[in-house]
Length: 395
Image (cartoon, rainbow, N blue to C red; front, side, top):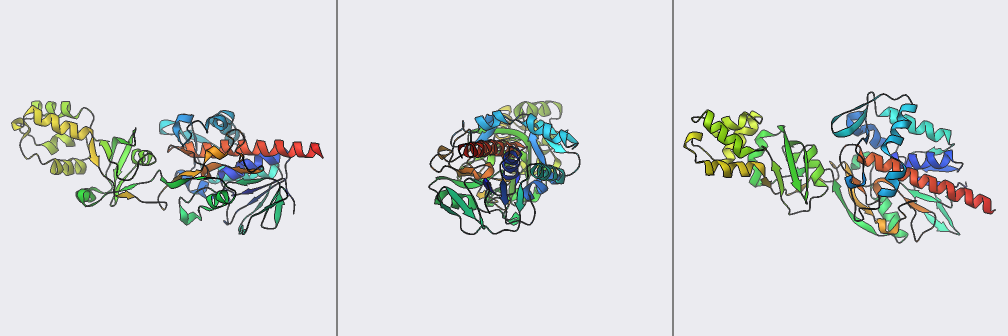
């Protein structure tokens, strides 16, 4: 069976590419081994799908080429996707830091994408093993279908329980494309024996500034039975390299707060002063770790200043991360040097496109990765449609 394009992957990026090309007149087939379309969409945002962010800009993305995402993001913005959501009557709300969620269910976003695919006459085959991918005479052949254009939209290996894998990298390498070594991103850290005392406060969340890899994020952090998590931690994990420390600002202006506590209540101990600003269990754990048994009134100001400096940049050395099983996305991926930033087409393989999480573009937590899926999908979908129209005109 012949098509104008075959899209591998029925996730956000793949469906967006398919509906864009289909509505512009291309005959599109989407193939996926999963039993449902949009499986990662369905579990995202606690089931409500954080579908984009008000603050999307290229600087919110990590890539070996920081300029690569600019073209696609500028030509299909968060406002464009929000318009689509509103045209489908999906109620939404804004949470912290510009994050947009469905009022109802993530199923509404999947239904919207499938409705748009149907409008474009897109054929979707689920539970379909891909098998070998052939390429000869300017056509790609997969699962009994052929087309002059093939779109890789199978994502990365994060959340393997959803059926995720690195198949996009295998296909890309087969066609001569390089792959930036993939790694788990937006992922919790594990801590070792040096921080075993913190396991006792598993479940304690607190506001913090987390720093690693030259970046800092101010959001909530969380101690877990295995290490560190929470939005601030997930954010810096994308920039962290093994062996590097992670620093947490646990208490802003800590030295001044400790001096003030000493002035007001000189007979109080450190944990009482900390408990005025931090969760009680965290205050107790920090007081034990910092080992200051004296009353504040008997503690020199210089010692309080040193403690304050530690509270503003407490250092942890993760033993690693919780891996792809707990990673929300995959960093690294198909090297952007081999792709057109305008069309997402492989420079050396006409008709081959790569989009979404499969590509070496990783966004911040908070809807940024979905926006990359939408934008890169639209870029490839438009390019497929234009190439289809040009091919028909030539014949």
